[in-house]
Each structure stands twice: as C-alpha cells, then as structure tokens.
Image 1: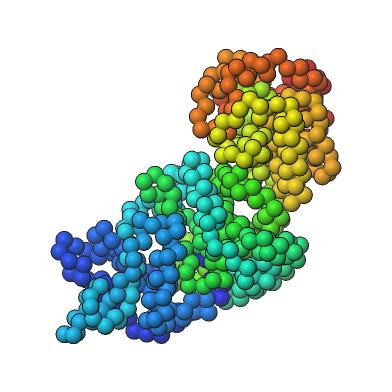
Image 2: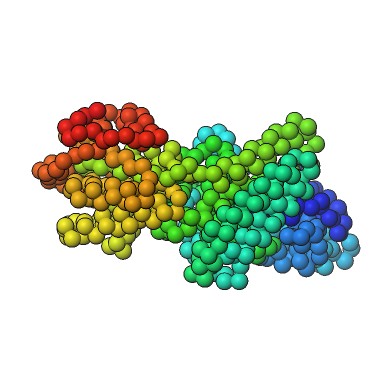
Length: 534
C-alpha cells in the first residue's frame, strides 16, 4: 500500500453485500463463465471472471480514503481510470454501473438506477506480477532498465503540483508514521518508535530547504504513489505500472524521487540490491536528477517504516497464524531497515579506466551495488555524459568531431563536477571512462581528496583480441568506440599510471572478484608504483 500513514480499523459505512453477491455469481457475466475468483483488500473487492477483472470500491471511510457514498465511489472509479491509463491504457477499460432494473434484478452496465460502480479491467496472469517474478528469481537487469524507463516517463509526463510536497509534506508523512507504528499494537517498542521519529525529523531538518526548492522547481508531481512490485506486471515483455493512487492527493502528489524510493525500498527489503541499483542508475541516467540524492536516505527510511506498520496491520487480519507470524516478521524487518537507511556507510569514489573493450562499464555496474549507501553507488559514465552534453539519446552515435580534445575535456570536467556533487550528497560514485590522460586521472582523484573520502583507481588491461571481440559484440550501447578507435588508443602515451592494474582478459566475474576487495577495503592504502601489476 502507499503512504496510508493513519491506519485505523476498517469503518464500513454502507452494506454492499447485495452487490458483492451479484459480482461473485458467474451468471452475472454471461455464458461461458464457470467460476469467479475473488480477491479482498481493505479498500476494494476484485472479481476475476473470464478475461475481465471488476474492482468494487469498499464503502469504507478512513482518514486517508473515503469511499463512504456511491457518488464518492463513482468519482474514485473514474479517477482510477484516468490516472492509470497514463501507464496501463490496455488494462483499464472503463467504469461500469451496477444497476437495478424495474423488476428489482441487478445488471452490470444496465439502464436502471445505479446502486454501485466498478472499474472494469483486462485480466492478466497473476504470475506476471513483479513480486511473484521476484520470488521466482525472474527479474533481471534488462527488466529493471525497462522499468526505470517506464517510471521516468510517467514522472516526465506527470502533472506538476506546487500545493503538495516539500518539507511540510514529508513532516506530515513522518507524523503519520509515528501514529501508525504506535497503533500497530505491541509489535513495535514505543521507545524505538520515538527514536525513529526523532531521527526522521532530524533527517528532514537537514534536507527541508532542498525539498521546498524541489517543489518550487516542479519536482512534486502527480506520481504513482504506490510503486511497489505488486503494482507492476509484465505485459508483452514490458513492465506496466498499474493501481496508482487516485483517492488521496497527498499520497499521490509527491516528489518524484519519493515515488521512486518505494520501488528501491521494496527491492532492497527483498535482498535485491543489485536490481535496485540498476533501476536507480538507469533512472538517473534518464533524468539527470542527481540533486535529489541528499533526500534519498530519508525517503527510503519513510518508505520502510510505512511498510512496517501497514504489514503489521495486515497481519492482524490473517486467518492463518503461520501467515500472520510471517507477516509480522516482515514488518519487524522493515522497521529495522528504516533505521539502517538513516545510518548509511560513508561515501567513497572509485574510478575505472582503461582502453575501450577492457570491460570498464561492466565492472562499474558490477561494483556499484556493494559501494556506499543503499542502493549502491552512482555510476557516472563518460559515454553517457558526452551524449547528454551533445543533447542526444545515449545510444545515438556521435560524429568524430564530438571526440575532439576540447569536447573530451568538457566531458571530463563535467564528470568531476558530477562526482563531487554525488559525494557531497553523501552517496558513493564510480567514474567510468578511458582516463587516458594523466590530468584526467589527477582531476578525478582530486575530487575525492577535496571531499575527504577514500579514492580507488582501477586500470583495466586485456589482450588485444579480447578487447576487439568485445567491441565488435556491442549492441545498443552508449559507447561509440569501434575497433579502429581502439587501435588509435593503443598509440596513446598514457603517462605514469599509479592506479591498481587489473587483468580483465578473463570473464566479468573474475575481473569483479579481483576488483571488489580493492574497492571496498576500509583503507585503500598506498597505490602501487608504475609498472607494478599487483
């Protein structure tokens, strides 16, 4: 669920038993429907019949969600269609009235007096849900890249809202978290709840000005609001976002990175840091929204804390003691995770250099999940920066003039600036580039020195035939390097190399294993002398 931070006991204000019985009857949907599957949530009842799904809003009133009248339910159904067609137009078919004919019989979409309303949807295989795919180990890097693209597009197109969000919006979220945790019975120690509240408020104090500035700059938008893996499915081999929040603007109209943080937290709590890092870096590559990073620990912690109390509340409704116990364990793990996000490890800066085809980008991506605070290091790639400075898509090939010394100098200056900004935000960074010139290597090392964080430089080397084969095999990549480019690079005088030399001739796993110990060492220690291959 989303930021439903004032959990309360369900307050049913109208009897819907007749409508529910009608929707649960196969004959309601015509010939050929032999059975109807029912799914209950605290805010809706969903009926799966044939190739369709019908969602009835429960007649309930919560502090954050009011479906207490038929008119409110009709309005909510219509809003759900409009909002979710932004991302799932083929799923959301329209609203339908449950009507009473003159003879008293109920019909679906008839001409009589409406007694309730439903959202009609195309039915999909429940195994396509991303939470189920995650449980089966069926989510991979490509899925996360496509998912981040879908989220970035939603955010880019979303309506700007200047009347929500900012520091005041997050203060309200934090207040609701405390109330929700304390209202979850004896599951959370009140002293630890008070400690978390204090720490969340301290984190908010440190980024409140940033959050207000982001709201004023248009980064508070009508987002999804409930962006976890159960609200994403795979349709036609593409991730589709559905079930966005329609019933509460304060939950839906939020900072775009707070929206993304729900997805990152959900992956993190499932032990899927590597997938979270992929989604995180892909989103940053697409949006260039590095200014959000100082607020990410607060956003992640709030999302985990909300997950803790909503899961505990849901556990109390489970008829199975074993399932209730499992959910309570999940709730307590999420509560602990909320603290972890507020105590991140210190940042550090890595640089991965070497000629084209040595596997720099593969190594950077492999290292990133294990470097710095959740969800891992920000990967800054010169190939992507060059395309951004040229104003083109990362996979668009640039002319040779884009690689003139002046242009390359601008790319490496921007790389250093971005790395400095990431470190200043408290996050780790990995700079990925050729770094053929001594001044380029000196500049990136100086960024770490100025930020007073550890620096590790890794210089990758591989056999000529291996590099050429890797370049020839590339598809849909930000790099414009060709075998001819590599042959020119071999003529470079790279000068004195005082970075750690890594033999990258073997497979990616071997290169990663050789690099990880150096990259994560508590004290990187002195760099090797020129010519040392250790």
